[in-house]
Length: 302
Image 1 (cartoon, helix red, strand yellow):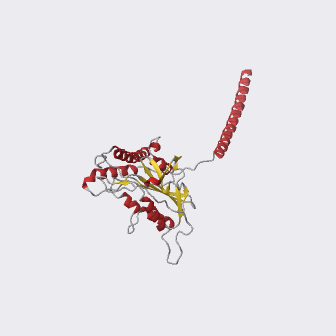
Image 2 (cartoon, rainbow, N blue to C red):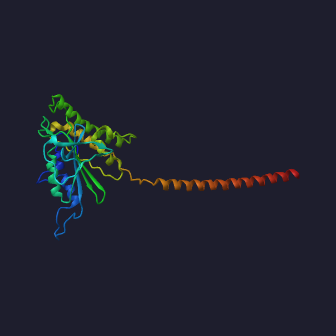
Image 3 (cartoon, rainbow, N blue to C red):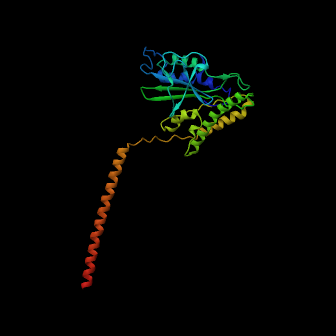
């Protein structure tokens, strides 16, 4: 979910009671809507594990956990202000010890996600009365099939002066927000250009998204949000240009990883056959050489 601040990213992602957003519709697609006409429950037996992360000032926080709760499985959802959120470290390409909750009803899971989403840090700026100051990542794992869905609501990119951020702390905060946005843009451009090095480690956001970009079997969808305000025309154009660049990313066919032992065995067989063919060729040359020497000797005697 990408776009300038105030363009409707969070609303598109989370929606409201009358207009469900992407999160609910995604969960509904995985788990089903509820009960069919014949009484059979859709999604019965399918469980998902949900993790909700916040990336603020280049730090990762667990929105489902509080300081006295820790990571792992959670039967209840964390309550309290932003001060009680647990900070997580990145291990490899994942957030270490992130809390998750399991369920099989889309409506209930969405309500809980909406509760913890309110723990995100927001601030009023000249560009947006309720501007999200952090990126929000919702990770939905489906253990029965080994699938994973990652939904990302990015903080809106802002111009520091236009946002009215005059204090040093506010300016640094806006700069950190833009850092994640710029890092993702660089990753998209590098992949689209076919660069040998992709700068995934430039931000925590791109580190967590690295698997999605590198796995040829993954599918990536970018939703661009734009404001109808004529004053935002330049930002709208920049957003659409970014989206056009992202469309240049082509997912290649997945190449299965070969077993090294089998690959070595196959190479040995191939080399063996080549050596045998060379031995036969050498033997043939030796026989031909002896025949020619015999013919030469007979010619000299006569």
